Length: 204
Image (cartoon, rainbow, N blue to C red):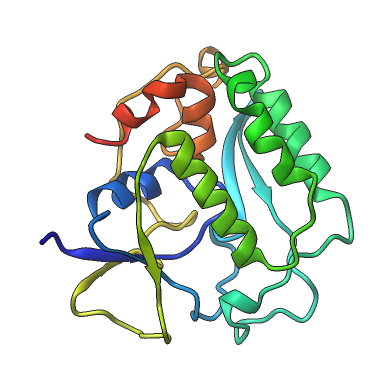
C-alpha cells in the first residue's frame, strides 16, 4: 500500500495541493485539530489577475489567535469579502475558456454565509474534487500530533511564504502575454483555463 499523507484544508488550494492529494490518495488524512496558523493558504488563495498574482484573503473573526483550534476558527463578515472575491474571480477569468462552464458550481460559495472556516474549506474541497473527477475517500485527525512517522506531512510544506520546488507543465493563462506564466496558482486558475483537461496537469 502506498504511504499516506496528512493535509490541512485550504481555501481554493494551489495546484501543488491537488497534485499531492492524487499522489497519496490511497490514504489522505485531513488535519482538523491543529492551532490556526495565520498567513497561510488556509484562508487565502492566489489567482492570476490582469495585474499579476492577486491574493484573495478570507478575514477571520476577532478573537482568533494562535491557540484557536482550526475547526473552531470563525469567518468574519465585517465587510463583504465574498462580493469582492467573486468580482475578482470574474474580472480575472470571465474571458477564460471554461469560466462559464464552472460558474454555476462556484458562485454559491460567495452567496451563502458559512460560520466556520473549516466547514467552508471542506465544502470547497469536495466541489473541486468533483469538478476534477478525483475520487477521494479521506479521514480526519482524531487529535493533534506534532509529527507523523507513517504519513507525509503537508501541513506546513505548502505555504505562501515558502519557496517550492514543485513545478507543473505550463498551460494557457488569460493574461500570460501581459504578466508571463504564473506557476502553482489556485486550482481554479487551471480549471478556468483548461477545464476537463485539468487533471492531466496534476498527474505528472
